[in-house]
Amino acid sequence: MQKPKTNFQPQARQEGLIVQQMPDEVLVYDLERHQAHCLNRTAALVWQHCNGQTAVPQIARRLGKEFQTTVKEDVVYLALDQLGKDHLLEERVMLPAEMKGISRRELMRRVGLATAVALPVIVSIVSPTSANAATCIASGQPCNPNVICCSTLSTCNSGNCI
Amino acid sequence: MLKTRTGATLSLLLADLLAGAWRAAPPAPQFFTAEETADLETVAPLLIASGGGALAFWKIRATTLKETAFAEDFKQTYRLNTLQAVIHEREIEQVVWLLQQAGVEPILVKGWSIARLYPEQALRPYGDIDLFVRPEQFAAAEAVLQSEEGRKFFVDLHRGASHLDTEPLEDLYARSQVVNLGETSIRVLAPEDHLRVLCVHYLHHGAWRPAGLCDIGLMVESFGRGMDWDVCLTKNRKRAGWIACTVGLARELLRADLSGLPAQLRTKQLPRWLVPAVLKEWENPVAVRHVVPPPLSRKLSRPLETIKAIRRRWPPNPIQATIVMNGSFNEWPRIIFQAGNYAARTAKFLTGLPWKISEK
Image (cartoon, rainbow over all chains, first blue to last red; front, top):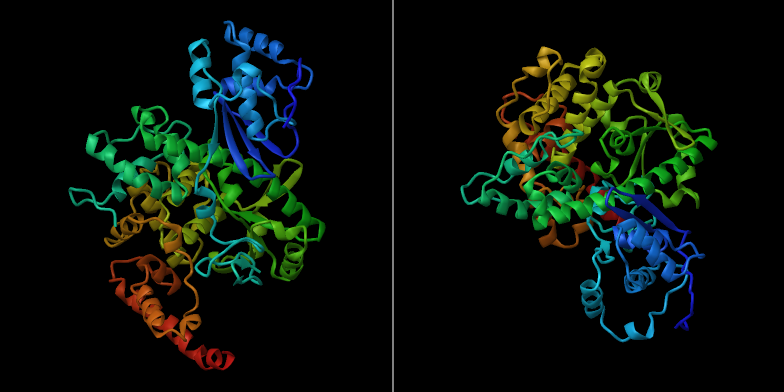
């Protein structure tokens, strides 16, 4: 575990990600873990300000400007906590002592009561679309005897198209 | 099987959900009863599984249905498709570049070449990269795809147009167009050829995917008025009939706008069996039901499984059977083609049986 740092300046992960900016949210695909995430506006703004040169209080102030209201540091920490868990930061962030040991649900409730902005939310995206849209399976990919392999030289053998 | 309480198939509900969904501003769905909305919950997972989830999201995103639970599932599919579209574009760039370096000039068909025409690429998911290559370049292409770099791509490599088209390949190349994807030039079919290939492909798979018919609607509405229909329909009257029927299906089921198209397409009377056959397929649009079944020879040592496998193959999909038997889409009963298709497959199996047994 990381030791808590004062004036910690979080750095967003840059490598191995595909990022798509949508009107109200940001979509992120982790090419290393093959996981997709959807960041709501608050989470996305926090993430975008994680440039390795901006400390949490500054991020909170910048968010305040965006939302035209006061944003507490707790909101930023809540976002950073989840961004770290989803491997979207170079380094995980330690929560301040007063936020430690509290369940995420309780944390959300407490922070939610004290803020006017939408809480940061990161949702994992899961859908069966791609597997079913393919009419064949590539070499080396898992298969079953009911699905044809793409290459004319491949057959489904021992659970993989070989 | 999905049947509504009233006995009508949910397939029509599904058709309504997808009608015009390929447009930048799709029409609002025409169903609003509580019962129909509830039925959509049943349809939603099937639609998502067959590649139509993002189109459904696109269609209902500005309606009251967007607040429903299944709308969130559609939206999740749309989000994932959005990301996958970016990944696929990178892969296509890489694989085409690799092939071009090896002196192979592929034509990209289906997949990205049709997805790029939708208002957003997320609306048209695809899993593999379909490429036509000249027969003399097939071995070189396959060597590239078998290499360490090439193996990571989902490529469906076709020697020429294989079963999808009978037009001379050089004509397809001559009419093809080059479009840019990033820094790579990608060769795609001319709209006339692409529509024909899409129609044949759709029928060849038994018209089981509702979203696949949206490709046809999109193509005719995008290019239909300026299209050289003599090229699209070819001189082969039978194939022209297949294409006219597929376009007719897009009109009948998905309300594709055929105005400005030749009268033979606009007023095409579909054979009476065709729409019910498609709706029957749409009752259960699940991919695993439609993939090529494993060879019967694999089950020879297990008689019970052999019987099950034989039963599973009957009756063949009437649309698929007609195409495979190179039949016409007319009012004749489909049993002729289904029986013919079944007999041909059985004969092929029996002919190879001694060899299969000796191999075991």
